[in-house]
Length: 262
Length: 257
Image (tube, rainbow over all chains, first blue to last red; front, side, top):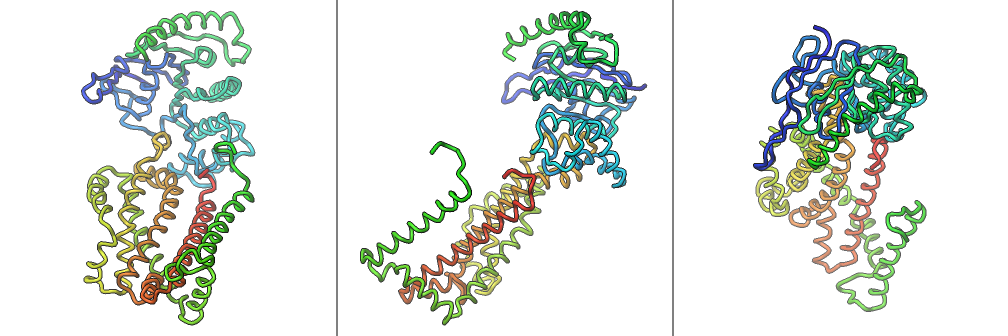
């Protein structure tokens, strides 16, 4: 059984000091086939990041299980690479050393590490910045490094938790195109979390819309826009039709979330 | 002047030196101007000549040397045991639960109050001096290091996990490098405290060292020598602090601190 299987996964956070427990995620089932690009789209408080963290093994489900290629997830591992919304480069390592972090953990020969790192530096367009420390890089460059670091490890699945959420609009658009071009070349399985509808349509094969707290998958929608996709696709009628549909789905959830004070 | 706006390096230096000048001038006016009784406070010139006497006639540099040796020895001893223990406590919560209550208790025990006991146990030799410094700095150091390591950014730890690191790798490749600049900064702070403890130890039971000289001078009512001794301590502190800062900056170029 290839790919990722999410089977009845739910998450309840225990209440603090006698307060009632919070149900972040209703039992959720989802399959992501190999080479698929699935986007989890939802308002804040829809448990989409929680679900991603459970797949990553950084959080434990209250019920259910996650299988990667048929093997249950018991904790984090290099088979599921992750890019976080916050800047998580190791500040004491240069760009190149950051990209080599996982390779060193695998005990890859040093010469091979250098070769792989150089390859991914090139792919994310950071040539000339190999020996810079993260604090000297812009947000976009930091996230490109984080993407290269995750990809260099050659994971089965790439997990992206609003990776461009902290970037300005122009940089975000460029990063989307970069990720898309890499994905269209490699077709690595991707699970991508965002609350940005345009981003979801532009990148995804499929979009799963999550409801506001407690999170639950409300709709799954296949995005059949042709590939390779160019940014001009965002102005086509097909794109707009998807956008109108998803906006409606999300809007009702956002209103519900706002009413609940999320 | 506007809040939080930095000043240039030259201006900062000039301002820093200016206060020393103001301070010494006020001291000179108070003493040389006859506003303060000479018996209680020597004037700057007397202080300098007393210092010259100390260095040339009484071999005071040997006292300085022995005091520095004690400070560095006690400090290194505390660091050699305290830093690894603090790291273990910060990284592993069971280790922390085991040691933390005792260390928190012990750090409130005044090191100077141990001096009579330590003299009974170890005499007035070097062991006693090192132990006073050790007790004074060790427990504080352990707790501060544990807090620093325990406060490592969780997202960095999680990123390392998703890159395939396991427990050992997390400690060696994330917790240690991420805490290193703050630990070095803490060591700089603790070295300052070690100076206080060594002088106290030398004043109570010693036959050499800067603290010993100060107590001797008190018996002779030589306030010039006392002040010179204090100034020497201050100067060495200033120098070692500067050296430590430069070293930290050199060692951790990636850190903004």
